[in-house]
Image (tube, rainbow, N blue to C red):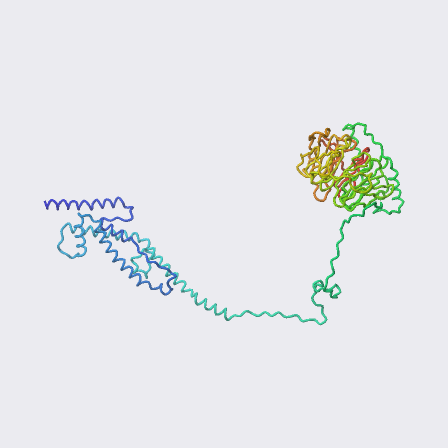
Length: 624
């Protein structure tokens, strides 16, 4: 039994190495293969690398040159540890059947000169030797790439990995390089040079004083001296009070004196006599119906402008224009920004002698009307809180209404005989003024819900109604129901989205209302029935953005053709346009002599004469 068992074990031992060899041939791509399980464990352990923490900052340059003793000590300890771990691992991994074989192989390796060997021990020795050679070859093949990194001075570091060898080589090379630069010696030399070198002292040469020369200029104000060099007193004089640029004129009547003409001139006296002779108003044929658009356009086409009909009247922008209703003479009145009232007679030649300028106010004159009962009277309203009546028969400007606490914006006649007036204030209040009562005060001061009032206009037929244009709303009031504590309007028009410049009834029947708004729209409303809502009829797109330096546009009705409105234009070439209530453009006035924007325009009540005022004090007159 023992012989047969030995033969079977021998056959088995022959077949096992053959199977291992076949596995090795099939798995040639694996990085490491061992023919003996024990050797496999050893090869795995030899791949383990023990790294010692090393920092360059903890060593000096001279210490980096001699790491041999430290590395030898670590390598010896490492080899001893490996041998101990190999033995323990082999005892753990080798199966019971292989223990006898492995012990024999170890004895064979330890005593190679023994003469007594069995056939199985010789075969095992040969296989063990082949496996060890194969392990060495595999390790050499793995370390083949790092042979270049091996340094002649690092042969004793055989226990380190190729990466650690290359790292130590780089450290030593860098240390040698920095040592060759001799940076410490250079830094020491630079410090010595800096200490020895001293900054040069730059001394400015002081200019020599000239005995008879002029010294530097100095401010007399800082020296507290006058221009001649005399020192001023220590106590400064009190500052002088600055007078108001636009002081209010004294109350009471003002003499009608011309600023641009001599009062003793015969021409001025003749001018006053001409105006005083117009004691009766011209008859207006209001019963005649409206002319057709065709004939109206034909008459407009015949109106032209020339250099003889362009007049320089005032020194500032024109805020208001009025045409005298006379049919024999063409008389134009304008109100200017600086409180001036200019009168121009277009029938007088030369034309410079027909312009007369008066100064009845101290602030802009925003509204002008000729009296409907006495054409020799002209009423003017100003921002300075005064309303005056110019009487050319007596050559004075009488004061009708005065309120220094408020600023006026517009007015209109409530009665046909011009005895009572409605005055609008910039703060939203309204005043009822009766010219028949003595004094210059109001009869009633009415508060409204409007923040501002720009224009006031009375209905031409039902004179108890009047319309006011505010910031963004338009109200229609009944003068019979005004309350000093606060009055509610009959109708409010809220279709406007921006600031409103004006609102006017149509001149003959009052069945239409035209408004001018800053949203570049002219709106026409149907006011035939004032007691109910007023519907919007037409919206006319028109550029009303005049900017800061131009007077705002105000669309006015033509007194002869109440279904047509007149308004200035920002278009080029400069023009004055007329629109029908349906929104259709009827006519455009223009010409070579019209080179500026005419913001304020007025049409003669019976004649085809149009006067437009610009922001430089000129009037442009179109006539047949």
